[in-house]
Image 1 (cartoon, one colour):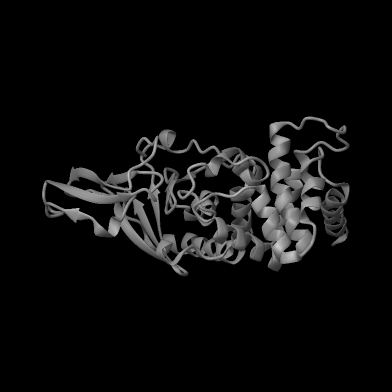
Image 2 (image 1 turned 30 degrees about the horizontal axis):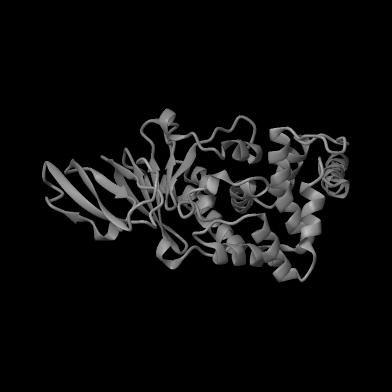
Length: 331
């Protein structure tokens, strides 16, 4: 990723000079790349038009092996350092398709000109994964599961394939940010709670699509364990508790207003604020437009008091207890 700062020009040219056998992917109008030399030459120079809409200038280049995956309406370009067995890619590709479909149904499809994705193997794992959202993703992950993917841009995820066969679905959690506007709003990952939890909530929806609906209750109960019971009024919440509560807030919105209203409100907010960012007032306005109810009161109940509402905690903890009792009584 290249340095940013100040006001970008309306347009400029990014010049990339690489060995002739390198694959190149970058910000800007990549489909209009102009190569001065043949790709078979020892070196080639590519001039890539950039505009002010390209919030994060970046270049990915290397001796990658390219594989194209069909993933629903999306075309996924998988770039790896070694050739991949097509059969080994089948199952992770199907998982990625289900994840993408979950994102489309929850947040609305990405713009038509965004239906291409790159999943690129990171050659230096230590230098790739330092996302500011990692703490949120840790809350929805299994214990000891490491962060193994991160967005480089709105259409590009870097993944760690050092463990062997590519787990393409590992790109799913950070990929959620693409549906929410990452790369369009420079301050996207600087949102305040609860909106800072929205990418991780989106990722949890993708996880449900891949692993099954039971994942929802598992994640909610894990998050509840991070939040103290019976907090004191006006008690300052610890960072982990606030992150967990912010994630649970979106589950509570789903429970309160239903999946259809939830998806319609989020899709409306994202369409209306695309490229300009959004805040909690935008979220409230979108839900009130869909429900014609006082959603602000519900938001205050959740976010202006420490802990979570007791009825929400009881609903999920009682569900867990009932499931455990049933399991114990089965032969």
